[in-house]
Amino acid sequence: MQEVWRAASLLGGDPQADRAVPPSGFTARLTTFTAAAMAFLAVFALALSLATGRLADRWSEELARSSTLRISAPAGQMDAQIGAALEVLRTTPGIAEARPLPPEETRALLEPWFGPDLPVETLPIPQLIAITEEAGGYDATGLRARLQAEVPGAVLDDHTRWREPLVDAATWLRLLGLVALALILASTAAMITLAAQAALAANEQVIRVLRLVGAQDTYIARAFVRRFTLRALGGAVAGAALAALGIAALPSGEAAGGFLTGLGFRGPGWLWPLVVPPFAAVVAFIATRAAALRTLRAQS
Amino acid sequence: MIELQNVAYSYGGGELFSDLSLSLPPGSFHFLTGPSGAGKTTLLKLCYAELKPTAGRVEIFGEDVRGMSRDRVALARRRIGVVHQDCQFLDHLPLAENVALPLTVSGRSDAGTDLEDLLAWVGLSRQANQLPPELSGGERQRAALARAVISSPEIVLADEPTGNIDWDMSQRLLALLVELNRMGKSVLVATHDLQLIRAAKAQVQARVLRLKGRQLVTAGADL
Image (cartoon, rainbow over all chains, first blue to last red; front, top):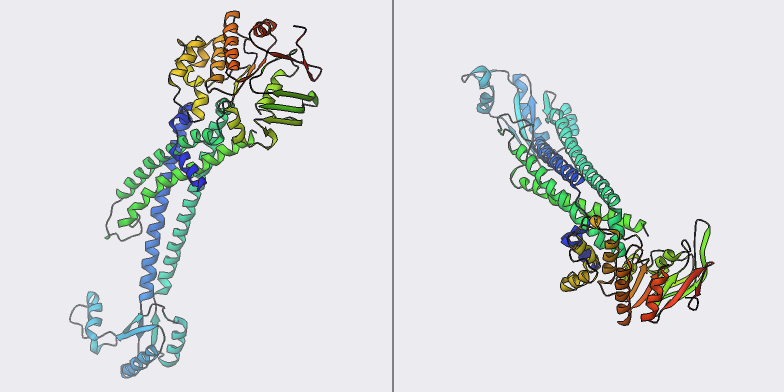
């Protein structure tokens, strides 16, 4: 509890303590700039992670939802094979529903190629069976083996082959985005630590004088901590705002439907850029405080 | 208030003093004298825990300095006013704020009229808004004295406080120290200004200690 109070009083700061350290123009601007750049990058990394996350979810959801069984057989055997296939599907765990496509749906599927008046009933067109899966999915390999044995003309297309690499890529991209975020965070902490060390070294005399007149370490640290926290916060607000504006300016449109236009925040996702500046401030606070107290203790 | 018992201090292989004992009871007035390099400044630094003894025991307000944390040292220093030989200030703050610094860092920033009176007393009212680098050596020394006493400390330690000021100002400074002593504060002044010591002895019961041959000896009679 006492620690919490101390941390709060450190952050709240003391304008008097702040005055004890001379203003340092150039390094102050560097800290602010660094925080802004890092916040900008962090918002982009967040957007990337969220977008690829959405993409992975969507693809894997669609992947899990449906598959198709295609049966090609000579006309006489067609009904028998369909019956056998349906029986196999009915007894396969994980399949919610198996529905042979009626002729009108088959016609609708072929219409773009052959026109509306195609007599599908008279053509040797493969019969499609739409399979709806249960949440857990089914064992495709096992099903293929059984179908091969019982319905030789059936080909199972579970969409895995072309969706899975995409889902893998999206998942991997999301992971990379999170790693980038972690690196940005660590770099911010490192840079602010360096800046704080430089400030502490440059103000050696200030620290000595304050010590001699009876200032406690937390008082001295407060002057530096408050300053660096506010600088980081200010820079991060600017950087995050710019990044958010940049992302908002991305052309939208599902028409392209691609990955690129999906990059960005949706709905409550827009709250994420707001999280970045306070987070940067907290990182700056911890980094500066640790640096200041470490430096001060090393002096005794 | 400050007790040194059988204290030794050595650095770089050389021993500055050994088996030295000193007691500053409340209300005492001591001069510390001795040749340059005898360790007057070091002895003062031991008294405000800037240095720790290499042997023996130093107690400040009844607390062994070896066991004191940095924060405890800081708290003890609020009760000790120190005038340093090389007066160091915060060069970016005006003189008035520098003088009030001991109050500021201990959270008592309502200096107000005390500060004005004190600055007037050391003759620095006009310089209140100047920055320390703009002051002369004597002005800095007076400012250092003002800073040392503003928080009404129980002990005043002064290292060559009259080194840079004229006789008239030395007298006024001495008068302030004597006044503080009459209010019950302990005073320890390191100086080799014998004139100052004589002047003091006319006004106050002062003991003169001489650092000589790594020991502290009472030197009253020869003055």
